[in-house]
Length: 594
Image (cartoon, rainbow, N blue to C red; front, side, top):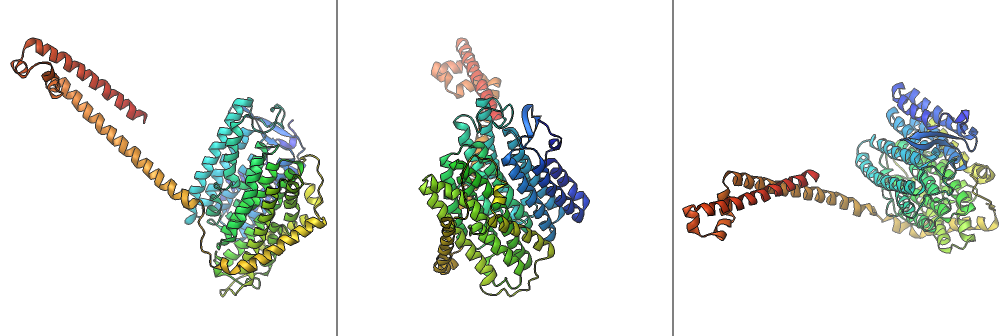
């Protein structure tokens, strides 16, 4: 059905604002961005469940705006944090062109999560990669090369997902999701090959181990306000896509998610660059979401999407607090900072709330949603996954104790520091308040979650609270033990230290090899053409050159120019010339194909 409210998909006004913002100037452009993204929240909230806008996309049936519990939750948090991030961009002196790219990124992400079919999803998925790359590139400097690597990896991931979607279409005969009218009877991707391709393709976006290095490589590079946008949309749209591909779960995906939780937290603990540390924790926290999707039960799926919502809040808050530190001090590394709680008290307070939220401390939103996934794994006796998720929790406490200690407590930063301005404070405190409200009053979060089926879950049980306190205690003790060894750790290489040089030198070798092969073929063609021309001019000379004459008759016969022999020479030379000509034409055709 097409409801009056759904005639305009929410991505359209946001993309229109992205086009208009640079023309309006910095003040008006940012104001428009805040208003349009904030308007997405009530718009999506009021859209009736089941509303959809059918259309034709590239000649195929598509749904440009599909409203269900999953897309609604994504739209609510995407719109809200988009408005906050645009306001934060204004407060941190981001130029209007950067914010325009960010609005394009928000708009394409909305298009991806509200699409009711795979074709619409992949169309906006690829546009999301383009707009986010432009957002990274805009800052210049180190961000340019990181942006190229980012674009390359997401191009590979998008190609694999597109291949999966095409394979699904061949199997199912439609791009529509199973949840929309006219869609297939079963949800997810059809066949055996399509889900595998999709898992790897989407795995790039969510940061599967081995496919994750773009996260810590890219997100620390651009403007601090750009990092707030980047930490939200790509990975969470990936989680949404993973659910659409595996609505009933996939245990291999769950195990990968659990490993991501541990790997990301462990790598984060070894970092000295603040935004690089936070980027690894995106991988770690997305691991809980991926595990929830992979486990597939009602509680796990609800927990996965609850954690999507909560993570967007506290992760954007963490990037905002760290962004204020960088903006006010110009320093990115922990070694250059210290004692900033006195000079940046509001920022330190907001950081404390965000750190307790991401670590899953009782009373904060991460405790509620993370607990849902962990509780399901424990209840269904997925013991390995359960232990890995708990271990990831200890690593999270360790990482943020380290980050908070070296930035706000330890030592004393000697430079002049101006406190966060009003716009920065407003953005941070608004998001911090939601982290607390959703942690203290979990029903507020439950009311936003999609209907994944019946389940029972109580956040604040004695066992769950004890679990949270034990993990926190282990984090404190662990940091006390590891503090000195960690201070001696330098930059720790990741998998990109292998595949970046391999890609560079491998590509160079391929280019050189193809170029040399082309040159060799070119030389052969030229030599063959010369031989053919010479044969046409003097067949007897060519035949003699190849030893044809002397093999057929003696030297005297050739010298005397015997008539019969001459005929034989002409016949064989003509035949040889034809063979050479055909060979030359075949080589030329081969070169043209290459």
